[in-house]
Length: 238
Image (cartoon, rainbow, N blue to C red; front, top):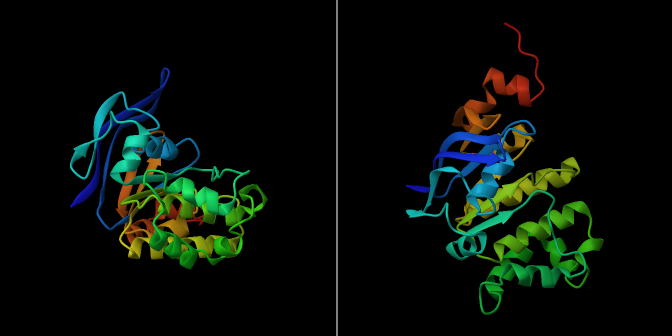
């Protein structure tokens, strides 16, 4: 069953068509990757799904409900949580306060969820009283994901979670995303690290200038010559 259905959406920045009749779906329990070069429309797609932008045409349905006209804060209440590019933690608040902000839609944070966040990210428990702005880049990314988990998402949107991180931390982040998915959270991930993303993903879509040009399982896309040449830096010989 499709948890998310995006049907023929168009998004404009003024006269520029950023998304050109895009359609795709994410089934419940899947990890789906959106790949593409800078400017392909990946982040715009996620922002449109999470209510930060509105399509000029098309429909978005989540769990059977049309959501393309709803504001972002209402989508959070439906179980859609977005970890934007750049982490966007609150630098002058502590780790604990940032995590509490992720649970703002509840009367109080769920301690079982907090415990699970600390199981996934032990470093955050060690830094619980530390200001978020003093954390390393990897720790801030962990905090941004942990904060989203405090909102008990059914669908988690991750935008470039590996950006600017050391390879060892990147591998750790992807392993944790796998665990989050195993906990029952559906994941839509935007990622330029195509090899890591497709190794994790059940399925993927490749975007170019606001359109989907390829789709398939993670394994199919990893073995596709066009993907290997464009995103994995491999030279393909005829």
